Amino acid sequence: MKIHCVWEHNGNDSILYAANFVGAYTRGESKEIALQKMAKEIASYQEWKEKAIPDSMETMIVQEKASGLAISDADSDVLFEEEKKPLSRTEYEELKALALKSAQDFLNLYEAIPDKNKSCLPARETFYGQVPRTASEMYEHTKGVNDYYFGEIGVATDHDGTIVECRQRGFMLLESQPDFLKNAVCLGSYDEQWSLRKVLRRFIWHDRIHAKAMYRMAVRTFGSGIPNIFHFV
Image 1 (cartoon, rainbow, N blue to C red):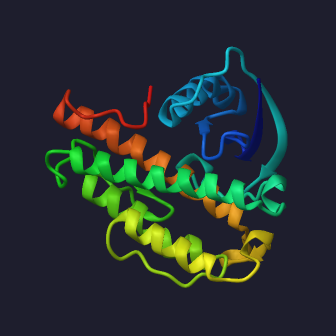
Image 2 (spheres, rainbow, N blue to C red; image 1 turned 30 degrees about the vertical axis):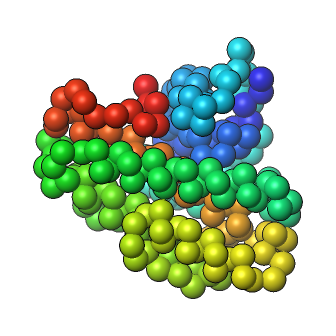
């Protein structure tokens, strides 16, 4: 199977997105390092979705974006060419279900961690401030992008309640807008281009970044017994 990769980079620092596996990604100090990780990422992603892992995988770069952002810290502003296309109702419902599954699994992982405020990780600063260290900080950060992502496509919502509840509420408000499936491209904050397809992908991608960080932190801090809900390797 061909894995269609969108390559976003700042110098050598690279993020590769698997465009035909929405939300799957790898990072590396070069494109080659990120490419080497992709087969394991797709296997992990498919196990999480309870879908078959492709027997063979061939990566191909279908789009490139040179960025001035902090790619090494997973800052991103790329809009895929595929993310400019209208959505069918069936496709939307499938992607929405995946974004909600991701939120529910993130919540389940968070709730499984014995002490939400304990972490073995050292403090570290990035472009957006201190990196979340504890499960509580990671959860609040991930939930907090709900109103930001929806707001970029003109949906005024919030991040009250659980990560699942606020995401569900955002989708309900989105669906009350006429022609939302036309997937209009919007110019959002910092002159970044957004679309509904991008919001759906960003939710799953962002959950996956911080679920991986939370799982690895919890294993290092508490040892065995942390459920690997996302099937990270």
